[in-house]
Image: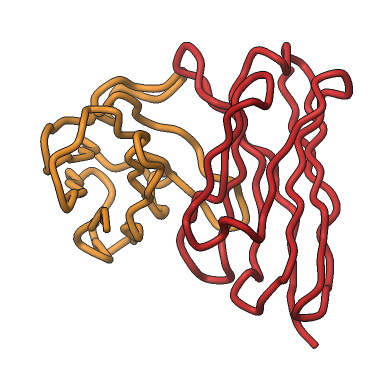
Length: 105
Length: 117
């Protein structure tokens, strides 16, 4: 069974710090991987597609990288509005990771 | 403006059925793959099913195959999810999603399905 594992489950950082979120696949996959941000009471919002392409209107502080089994979402300098839950999804088999909660330290 | 409006959620008893609808507007509905994604209370996202532009290709998550049926009516700009033999673990917010194009992807606000006696 294909599994996407996100780490850490919770990340506690302060505004201005750099955030690094990991998404690991149980087997090598294509770069057809996306990242979402979800805030309480809202639908998810697409951040990154194709592992490294920013979606329309997404600030440059968000970047994606990786290949094979290891993918990373990096937020270069956290803004207050970035504290939310982040999910990765592999779009070839549609599986989601379990999410990383980014909280204010 | 792209809009996706889900409806049809509500309270249903275990073993019951429900049909969700998603009304699409602001884009050419028949040009896009569409999906259903759900999120249980306090839980993560779970892809449910998707369907191609003319409805001839459908994919489902294994755990829902045989119980859930995705369909669409391009003349009505609508997407549907027929859910049968509902279980408590199907309790979730169900989102309608328009497939990505040019870096844009759209989600509805979701409709809540509660399976309880």
